[in-house]
Image 1 (cartoon, rainbow, N blue to C red):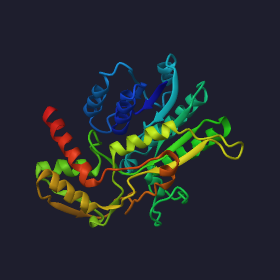
Image 2 (image 1 turned 90 degrees about the vertical axis):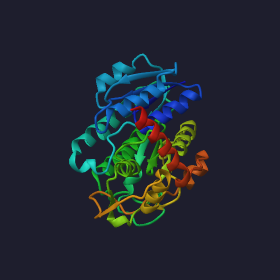
Image 3 (image 1 turned 120 degrees about the vertical axis):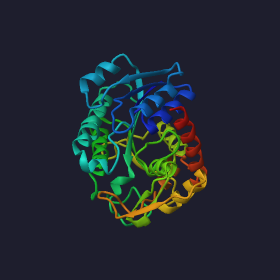
Image 4 (image 1 turned 135 degrees about the horizontal axis):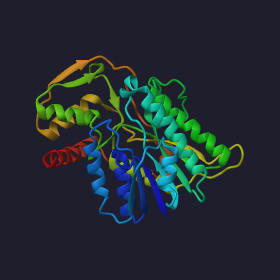
Length: 327
């Protein structure tokens, strides 16, 4: 079995690829290595995968239909983990067309690739907790309406779910969407709060606290996310006939809504410093609180997160120290 992982040089993509390789699977990774954040970090992630003989990498943009087809024409892909996307809520305010190209055209390209792939077993793709928008009912449940996004990023992820449903219905492609909740850990993204706060703490700069600190997040450690993805990949949706296509969507989070200031204090403990804070208003496109109802995924695939913020943040800090030292 050969598994295609898109966004293989990304935070989650690298960890998923490595976990699959360590299970003895063959992995084909693709990534365009764009400069949304430091490309050297993406290249360093790829170096973590290079020692595995069953890993193949293609530098390609998922919105390039011809290029994608040519790059993969000799690969015998049986499953796809689609993680490539233009990420970030705030960036979508200033760079909207990047989201249309990567998250809409790019996703359509992957769906069309899967439609024409003989023997495809399962497409697992990344959605986002951002689809819940300003929903006030907590915890967020997949049964709730997600028709009022508050950022373009969220709108593209909701669109991905609709597109996947269409292809599951028309072509009976087994698809599962995963709504990620604030993923953190080693090899993470430099635009995320825990990394930005760490940078500021080490450089003696104040950290920016939005909505005056009145925010909560369902922080989910990367190892729990990877375990959930692998369990989901192995659990293929059943085709229930014309009105019940092989389509699912799950929340994948930690099922704990933690105050933003707890993240700050946990980082302070791990770094052994006291942070200087700069309170700021809520940013456009942001939401006050996220909290995942994970019961459907727990029931169907056996997903069970085990890592608390107090356990996960020190592991990120240890990695950050070694990465910065070696960079």
